[in-house]
Image (tube, rainbow, N blue to C red; front, side, top):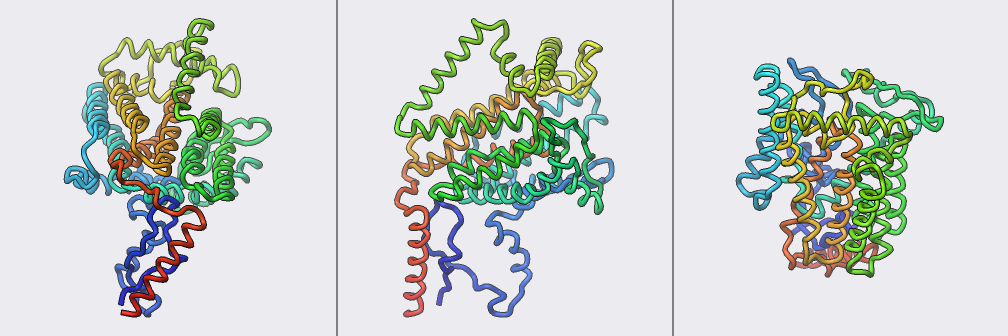
Length: 475
């Protein structure tokens, strides 16, 4: 006799098939407790492979655990352990065919490590080069190898949304009072990231959460807003609005310009897609509008389009002008050291620019590791996104996945001009890139159009499984 899951155990993914599958009897139902049952607990609760689930949870755990000369966070430990397995899976073809970004990110990591050795010597460069390689390749290939279907993407997004909502009450407390309850609690057990106190904005405190900076908190919490609405909330009237509102509202508590700009861009592109959903060429129209805007700024302003964007997506004019100064002197550093960069040294700038921080991910990559590294990173990201743009033959549901990922990555490209991705934000970005590659391997005949949707689909799944169970009992 086969035992099949009941209707209540149907898949959480709104886009996947509802066919019945065999499952093992629940150990607790028969009074059994095996080691394999205990080891599968986390996977059964999240529906994700254990390395992915632990990685996602580790992103919001602020512990900094000293191991020798290294300070390792939970997600770094997971990435170090997962990298050999991911590379074996990738080489053996378990993650589909090798793609151009795979090679691009490998070359970027090797070149960046070489530039650090060139600037600081082997001994001093070993640690930062190793950390950069782990955070780039391990994070990318973790998503590349373990998120291989729409079901995996939906479950990953659902766990991310649960983590964001779990942090929201503590974020509200920090937003109103300036207290750091998450960091206080975790630092009582192990060393945690340093508490950062910033000046209030609009009378409220900028929420740091479990991250190094409020910008990191906002970017993480708002990163998948488009995926949440277009994919996770598809066909679910209440959830489709409440879940994006919850994660977007939590991201807004960071009170930082970059995360709020990311929310605005994702919202605008999602609304555009909805308003013009009946027009096949809606994105070409948007590109035309963007081109006109680019030309207006290029010929009607005394700023270049890049400078215009950098200076205007800020809370105050002083921050905008300071970012323009970073762009000017940072670009000069790139031109002076175009191939190997300057490593982790500070770039040349006037004395009145006290801080050496660079609020531009793409620019800082070129400053530290030279133009080859910046071109490898940006080229790999653009190739992946561009291939998704021109991916054809998908049905309506998979096309919604494609559009949501394009919106997500496009937002990262723009926001990367005003903020640097590092730490948890960087590995999350690389993981998301890897988590989207499976869609490139979907063939036109692999569709989900035959599936019922929303509540009717779930009821259909339940009836299928119950009928199958009755037939099995009869045999």
